[in-house]
Length: 329
Ligand SMILES: [Zn+2]
Image (cartoon, rainbow, N blue to C red):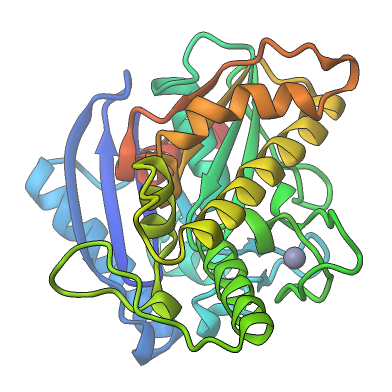
């Protein structure tokens, strides 16, 4: 049977149609009408499906449907929670989509869809247990065992980003302190950099100077992106006026990355760790990750490969398509 998958993002929605074997037959994307509310988003999914089927020459009812969303369904109320597309929170979103599309839909959060896609068709293919990690604005993850996604009774499997590493650590949006996400996500790394800059300024009394990563345009130190920080460290930019701060926050970031993975490995011991999200493009994670994982691991021995995804931005939508087929089967 054909497999249709949606990846509903905060800015764009993508849809794909896969063959029985997983080959991409057709795909489309369009902006997500976030400001128009939940019903407009549901209507946009119907339009995307219809357009896709027309372009692929497929018939209604000849495919399964999977949906990747930010956030997840509450196991008790079946309403969406923790979605950064906030107009959807508190709504029975899956039921709304099923009603509009006229068929059953399987849904999971985007990190789970990423993990499933990479396990079945990407860098995790051939491994029994895959831990798929998203390090982007936030930090998520998902587990796939023998080709099957593990969701769990609380739909929490793989949510390693909200395990607290330090009860006295930075406040996290989820209500806890010191969550892994406050250290190793893009937003977390940027916040730790700003903290370090403020500390440096209060200790030295020096106003922050612009940190120049390139001659034009200058990048203000306070607005340095996570990618900028990692790139500056990777290029060993010791010429930068705030190099010690870049080095300090990047080394802390890498250390927490190893510490977080070591906890996951101590509980599940996956066969492979596949990284995705914007920060997964940094070579630092693959260069330093294995040694730091080993350093924080019980027994000090660790052979688990840490690899980059191979499906790129398409992993979410492909995983959603596979999800629909898996739940239907
Ligand atoms: Zn948290």
